[in-house]
Amino acid sequence: MKFLIMGPPGAGKGSQAARIKNHLDITSISTGQMFRDAYKAGDPIGIKAMTYIEDGNLVDDKTTNNIVWQRLTSDEQLENFILDGYPRTVNQAKALDDMLDKLDTKLDGVLNILISEDVLFERMEQRRVCKDCGATYHLTFKPPIKEGVCDVCGGALYQRQDDKHESVKNRLEIYKNKTKPLLDYYDKKGILYNINGMQSFENVHEDIMLVLEDL
Ligand code: ADP
Ligand code: ADP
Ligand code: ZN
Image (cartoon, rainbow, N blue to C red; front, top):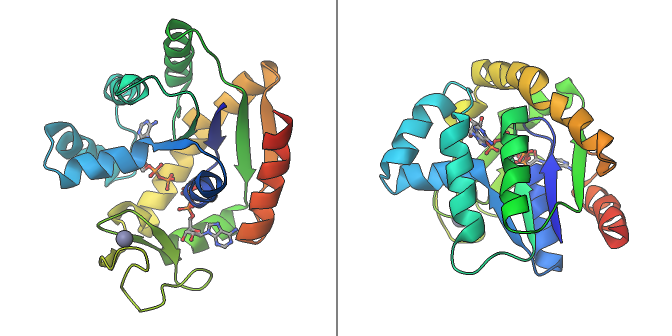
């Protein structure tokens, strides 16, 4: 099974991808997390990408398409994957179609998580991320057991620079202008599934699993 999880920043893409991974034998690929990991490792690609990311801008298509292609073809070819946060532009969507053609496969579906703007700002404000393993928390709805410390690995939690209010505003504008048009692109292919993201973690997960069972 190969599918995308889409939605504005804060919709719950990463949280839901992590839950799906616990239920199905599937690899989750987050381009945002790949850039953050590359930055942490001191990789030049990550250092360059972070200059865009901190202000809430998109990393250029060429760099982004390249890291996805490398990931899709690393080790053995991936049979099952969720792409979280990619594609984000029409050019990336076309590049992804070309990559999948080359691998003689295609997407089974696109999950689109819907949330309102108020909820989105509140979620980014309260999101905290583990600097070591990337696990995500929410100060109110998913607090860590011990304040400031990751439940999974004991790493320190921090607020992403791009989760500050000004960056979020910019990311939302970019989402509307560059990423939202993709919904139409996938709807025309007949593979778009909308999910109400303004429910508990568990209920969103259940709605997603219902869609995946039918793919
Ligand atoms: P995205 O990957 O789409 O940016 P995340 O999965 O990181 O979104 O979620 C954004 C923030 O909102 C995180 O702090 C997460 O813990 C929280 N969150 C995600 N889904 C829900 C939900 N259904 N209810 C409450 N909080 C949520
Ligand atoms: P969120 O889920 O909160 O929207 P991500 O972790 O997916 O955030 O992405 C963080 C940042 O990484 C984006 O704002 C952007 O700067 C960069 N990024 C991630 N994926 C892409 C992509 N497909 N194209 C360009 N930039 C990307
Ligand atoms: Zn951790």
